Image (tube, rainbow, N blue to C red):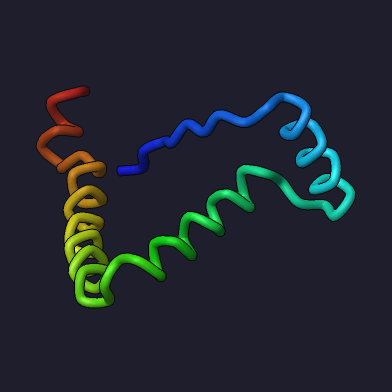
Length: 78
């Protein structure tokens, strides 16, 4: 699950930042996402990152399996 973070920035600074990022074909949201990943790598211990990756990987197949209706569900809808 993704969560959002709100950051307050002076309007003039934000406008300037977006303008100069745009000149380099960059987007503020992508740069912030990249920087947050760098912070995560820097401050979260590797064993915790590994645990999170393992638990996230376990959840993905379960969601995909539940997303597809079973044959009995398909027949009951008809």
